[in-house]
Structures are given as C-alpha cells and as structure tokens.
Length: 423
Ligand code: EPU
Image (cartoon, rainbow, N blue to C red; front, side, top):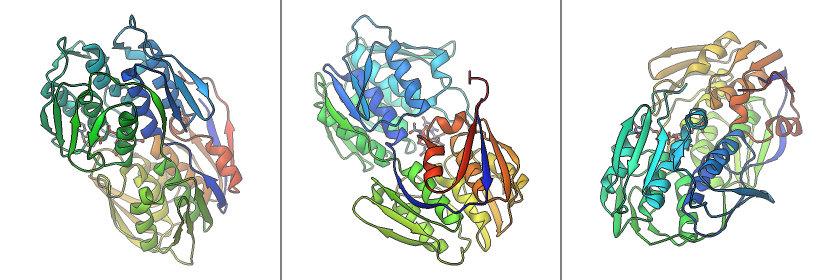
C-alpha cells in the first residue's frame, strides 16, 4: 500500500483544474447498462472507484474503451450475467448503483449487499423499497440482494424516507424504463443527480424535476446512446480551496461550477476568506485572520458531509471555538483522533466535534480510514511542521485524480512512497 510523505509547512497557491466528479461518474457508468446504442462519457476521472465500476460493468457485459478524457461504451452483451460479484462490490458501496438499471433492463439482478463501512452503517433499505414500489420482488439471500421483475417494472408514486443520493439515482435509473408514470418524492437534490438525469434524457428518457425534491418520470420502452459529460468534482475542488485558505495561500479552481460550491464558498467567506467567482472559476484567498465558525453538514444545498473532514482541519488553524456537527453519517469523525495526534485540540461527543484553535500542528505518521478523512490528513500535513506520513492512501486514490501532481503544481511537496500492491 502506497503512502504519502509530505513536507510542511507549505503555502498552496496558483491555479488548479477540477477533475470530473467521481460521484457523478459512477451513476453515469451504471447507466451504460441501460443503453441500446454506444454511449460516450466525457470527463471521467481516472480514479480507482471508476476502475472498479468499469470492472463490474465488464463482468455485466458492458465493454468500454478509452476515448479522450472519457470512455466509449458498447451496448451490453445479451448473454452477460446479471450478478454483481462480492469481490468487486465489497470494495465499493456505489456498486449498488447497478441494481436499478439491471432490474429495469433485464428483469433481474443479484448484487452482493454492501457491508458496513468506515463512515457508518449506511443501509440501502430505500433503494430496495423503491424497487419494490416499482413492482420488483426483492429478496435477501446469503448476503445478496436479488430482484426480479419478469414482466417489467411499472410506474408508481414513491416517497424516500430521507434524501438519499445513490438511492435517488438507483430508483431514477429503474423508473426510466418502467411502464407509465413515476413520481419520486423527497429526492436528494445533489448536482450529481441532475447530471445523471441529463444523461438519461439525452439517451431518450423523459424526466422532469431532477435537482428538486420531486422527480416525475414518464417511462419509455428503450434508451439509446449518445454523448454525456460528467460535471466537475465539487468535493475535490473544495478540498483544494480549503487547502489554499488553510496554508495562508491563494487558490483558483478552474473548469469548475461555482454554483455547486456555494455552500462551501459561503462558509469560507464567514471564516474570513476572500472569495471571488467567475463563470467557471472560483478563487479563495487568505486575508489575515481565520475565525472559527460553527458548521452543520446537511443534504444539498447544505454543507456537504464530504467536505466536513477537510473543514475540521481548517478549523484547527482558525481563532476561537468551532463546533462541527455531522448530521448525515453517524461515524464520520475518525480523522479527529489522527488530527489530535498531530497537535489539534478536537473533542468529539456523538455527532458533535468541538475544535479550539489555532493550534500548531506537527508532522506525524497518520492513518487514513476513508477517502475524505485521508484528504483532511493530507491538508493537515501541508500546514504541519516537519514530515507527515499518510498511510493507506489507496483511499485517496479512490476519488482524487492526480492529487500529488496537482498539489505539486500548487507549490506543495507531496511524494508517493510505493508499497506492496493494494489487495
Ligand atoms: N440511508 C438510509 N437508507 C438508504 C439510503 C441512505 O438510511 O437506503 C441513510 C444513510 O445511512 C445516510 C443518509 O441516508 O445516513 C444519506 O446517505 P446517502 O444515501 O445520500 O449516501 P450515499 O448515496 O450512500 C453518496 C456519496 C457519498 C456522500 C453521500 C452524502 C456517491 C457514490 N456517494 O453516498 O460520497 O457522502 O452521498 O452526500 O455518490 C464520498 O465520496 O466520499 C462519499 C462517501
């Protein structure tokens, strides 16, 4: 397993381009299962989770080849299996996104149940309830979810018990081929959902309201292909913007959608940053003192849970007390203990972390437990004195494209130390 060696402190400054969003690319890749014609996806980030999803798709009969900054996918082989293998699915929860398209297109699916993960239990009951509402039979058997809808799915009205991102995406991908009209209520509103809906519409689906709590779908018989583009990664981009501010620097994120970054931009402005935006860029610069500000994560358009860990690192350098409440996942503070080992003053109680700052951080060997926790520790290494070793960076490789090159271009010394291959 590779590690990062980071020499701190450094000042992060310059321009960096956002990569395509991992969390928009994964549902778009799953949507290739629905296509009867070739489908090209542009701006797909070269990250590990995309590789895992491509392997799963290949197993399910969808072959893709590299094409520019994306991939060209061919329609699924008709004799391909409809079961997601445990070995592939266990490494990535988002594999569950094939359940909706497989059930809709092939009338059956068998996918290994995703287990618990580092950030919480993360059930998929809403995905299953949505498929049942669409007329599928759902069985849990030996750790697998099996769905069956031999006569096809039928339109329905379904209300999610809570806004779920991949749940909304999964049921949307199932509903596009269901007979008649489907009305989905209390949907998640993340920009990645709108991006998926745009792709499905381009393939021939009839969808209205994606990006709002209520989505209407008029089922169609079949979907074709086309060419879709993945939106910029607001979480990756947000990580660099926080890094710039944290290190007293000045970072301009290019090829971005500033509107998607508004919850972050508002929070950073409240902390004391200078924030400027243009049509496709956003600049965040340090302007004197950082003030500690409370934060609560929330579904979009609230502050994203995927930037909570990075924000916590920022708060270690801000003046005063800040309370960070995690309201999406029940176990997403594992980075707090590692930050404390580096000298941060963080106290966690339930879903609330209290940070007193500013504190001097010092380099240490730290271990990442999930993707965003890893990003927070890398940021901490950039502001800490001396050498920081971040272990288990395969988590980072799941979602950050060319991270050491991008950090290097922004003036920070981050070196990858190769280890034995990740299983
Ligand atoms: N939930 C249920 N039942 C369900 C589905 C969700 O109880 O059937 C709960 C979850 O346990 C959680 C809340 O609802 O408490 C919201 O979870 P959601 O389903 O929205 O999360 P997700 O779809 O599994 C996606 C992202 C995550 C991101 C969350 C929240 C992808 C592939 N993953 O996960 O991204 O944190 O939405 O925004 O889109 C990451 O990139 O690091 C990451 C974890």
